Amino acid sequence: MFSIDLGNGAEMVLRDRSTDFAVHKLINANLDHLREWEPWAHSDQTILSVAGFGTYLLNQWVKGEAVPCIIRQDGQVAGATTARINLYEKSATIGYWLGEEFEGRGLVTRAVSALLDTLFKEYDIARAIIETSVMNKRSRAVAERLGFTHEGTLRGAQAYPGERRDLVVYGLLSEEWLSRSGG
Image (cartoon, rainbow, N blue to C red; front, side):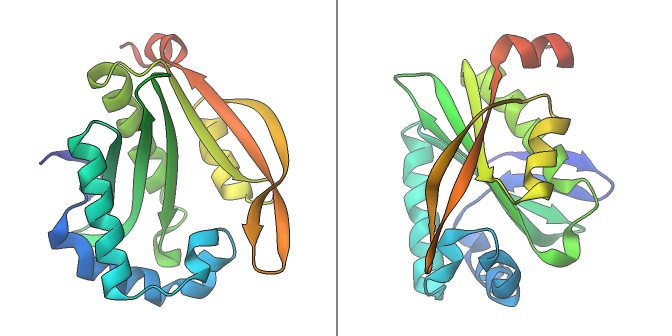
């Protein structure tokens, strides 16, 4: 297990079975907020489904195909960030979400920055990707703040109940990140 200090009482830790109940509680307390941006939030979020997905991610982590993390603020689960790794392509797609009360503190930017350091330095990833709804300004701002390049828009790529939304794709190469971060 690892823990990365994100400053100001925040940390990023590996998502494991001990986090299932707190993640479940946070998701369900924020369902209306999460459903605006997360297609997965439209399905039932039972403790079994949350724990099952957590177990799936841990199995992916063991195989080197994911880095599932929890973001904590002052010991309380605030959200999550996960990198899903394509070993063949040496690329990782990063996703993240926060409980509404934790937004506006820079938690996601700091967590994704730490995740990028981990991916590029320890996993030998060549490319990181962030995909988000064209309309999700906060998520897009995270990618732009971290130096990702807007690479394109996938029309109708996200399925929401009763509609399809355009998905914007951002990319960042290892050498771009390492030259900026002094890596």
